[in-house]
Amino acid sequence: MWNEPSPRDLSKIPKLYSTEKTPWADKIIHQHYFIAGCDWYAAEYDPDDRLYFGYAVLNRDHINSEWGYFSHDELTSLSHDGIEVDRDLYWSPRKAGSIEDIVKGMRYL
Image (tube, rainbow, N blue to C red):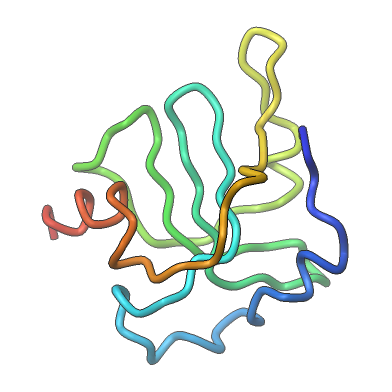
């Protein structure tokens, strides 16, 4: 993975299940990862299992995008034509309801 987050970066993400009662639009997305038309938005993180909860849009398919779990280890193992998943270094935490990819996908529910 390019620009892998440090333990300090990951410690700023709420623990798994800690925001489950928060409406989707109000969940804070702390990290954004991307590669070749795929985006993962991290709202929660478990450092023991290296597991995120967040929103995934694969191949720009907003109809089938969804909230769910994704693994840090899986993100680090992905590559496309020799290009690895990258962490968005210009990302600042913001509400999911302000992120176009998530809003587009939620329209299909």
